[in-house]
Image 1 (cartoon, rainbow, N blue to C red):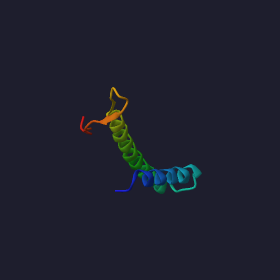
Image 2 (tube, rainbow, N blue to C red):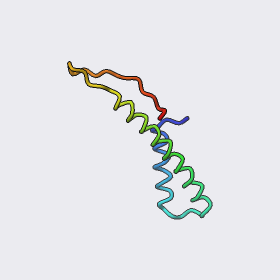
Image 3 (cartoon, one colour):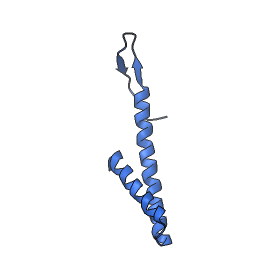
Image 4 (cartoon, helix red, strand yellow):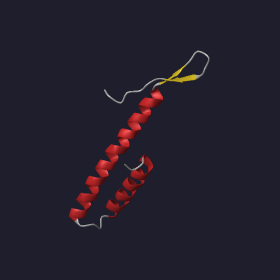
Length: 73
């Protein structure tokens, strides 16, 4: 599975290519579909990271304590 950064770079390249508007319809649809998948994968990773950050609980002494995080809802 590609890293978040690799997926984001690929998504940015797809958007740039689609914005040019010089592709045949079939190729545009194929790239769009790939972009939607990459976007969903990136969002999932960002949501998981956000959840982990939210699980850090500030202690009375100002330190942070990590709490277990479950991705299941």
